[in-house]
Length: 90
Image (cartoon, rainbow, N blue to C red; front, side):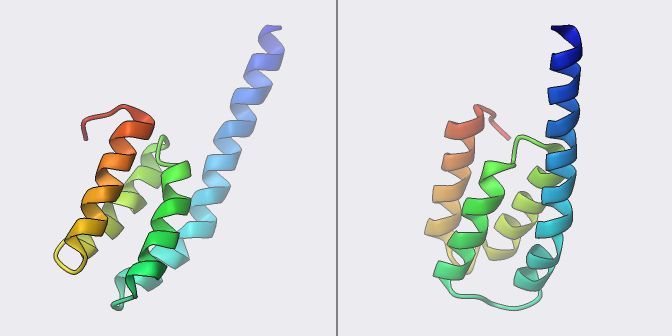
């Protein structure tokens, strides 16, 4: 039983690392230009699914900070969605 738990935990860590590698270029791209609110929402939807991981949370925060004054209502929604989904007050 313990071996199964460690194996699954290892797979989760690998999945988060892969997600970081996949989404990092998208985050860099979105932060280097001004995108539509729809494009921003799509990216934040994907990042939110992995925001329990510290590195992914860093990407999520980077996008939110970049667009805070461009789309404030959208960013407010995603900050609240993060808190609701992951139960953190960050």
